[in-house]
Length: 114
Ligand code: AMP
Ligand code: ZN
Image (cartoon, rainbow, N blue to C red; front, side, top):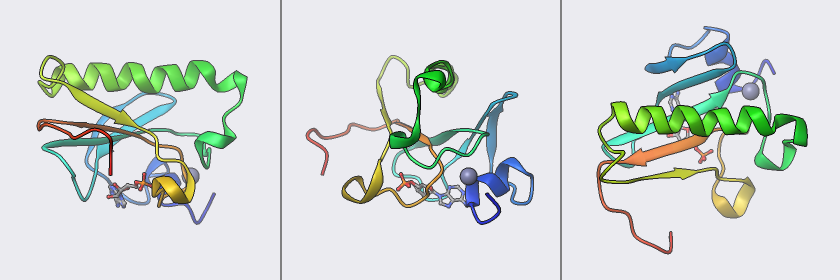
């Protein structure tokens, strides 16, 4: 997707603050952090929203969470706690239409979310 911001990061056209990279996953710090730790974990392959995943993507989605768990440890928030969020479409406030898992931690979050 040539007009996708996160695909441009995967292609190296834009350089985010990368914290982890594998052959199929990229993780980088959110440019507008909502918590002391705010990392986005994306598949390198373009998938627009959570609505677009298929049963074949189950392993990939699981590996996004595995990266989140590893980063929670390295960020020092595994024990204090953290939140993992996929925003899907308008009512959830999705702004970038390339699947991304938010890893948020380092402060106390409220529930229910706003
Ligand atoms: P969402 O609202 O779930 O689509 O989240 C999109 C996220 O992407 C927001 O938290 C933005 O702050 C973040 N974002 C947008 N542009 C960039 C960028 N250039 N580098 C890092 N994060 C970005
Ligand atoms: Zn994309």
